[in-house]
Image (cartoon, rainbow, N blue to C red; front, side):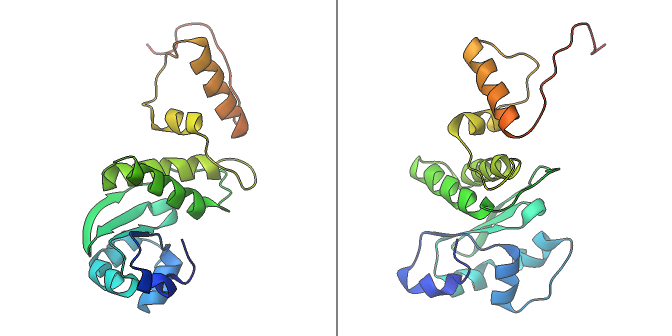
Length: 176
């Protein structure tokens, strides 16, 4: 997650994570305000040549990410909307979660999904923050109306409170 990613090209890194701004500077491209995925999809081979990396996780903020392997586009990942984002440390969280996912045997699509969820969890909190395992589990779990067990409820409440969210309990039938 270097600001000057080509400095490490002689090391042939397994994974690099440039963001949009770093990538357009590296490729001498114009800045787009939207459709950045479409703008950068054709540049996988050129990025691979410049970075000498097997995997490139190109992050595009609210537009998600593009994952290239050996110059080929493997997948695109969308990012969920974040209302109150504090983006300091998002790249560090993304690359850390990516590395852990890869070391755990995840596919590149699984890696990108996990990394995106971890980064979103971290930036939803006030100030520079990290994503804890319990929070990542909650973020990756399908949204459920029912939480089973005291520990699951407690972990979910703590995660939401750390993100500055309010938890409200109601009684009645609201889904008819």
